[in-house]
Structure formats: structure tokens, C-alpha cells
Length: 67
Image (cartoon, rainbow, N blue to C red):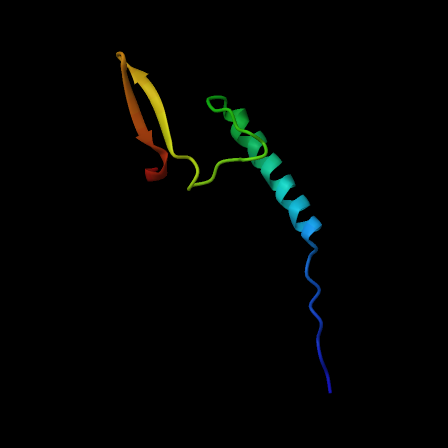
């Protein structure tokens, strides 16, 4: 009789890896210069939402999810 054991990552390891990934993405996005990126909550396709720009005293919204 044979069996196999799969060892999964611990919760702490998963959270540390996620924190590292978030910090790396925040550094990349912040280096672009036009946006402030919170390192704890870097944007993704669902969280970008809308960016407003003021054009001739009118606010123009661009849906970044369409890009």
C-alpha cells in the first residue's frame, strides 16, 4: 500500500508572500509618477475604478477598467 502527502504552505507563509508581492507592485506603480499607490493595497483590474481629470472646469471621468 502506498500513499502520498502534500505539504501546503502555512497561513503566515502565504501572507508574507502576499505582502512581498504587494510591496513590489506598489514600488513599480509609484515609480510611474502620476499615481499614489498604497503599498498595502496595490491596484488590480477590479480596484482601479475611475480616474478624474479636470478639463476646462469640467471633470472628465475615464473608466480605467475599460483599458
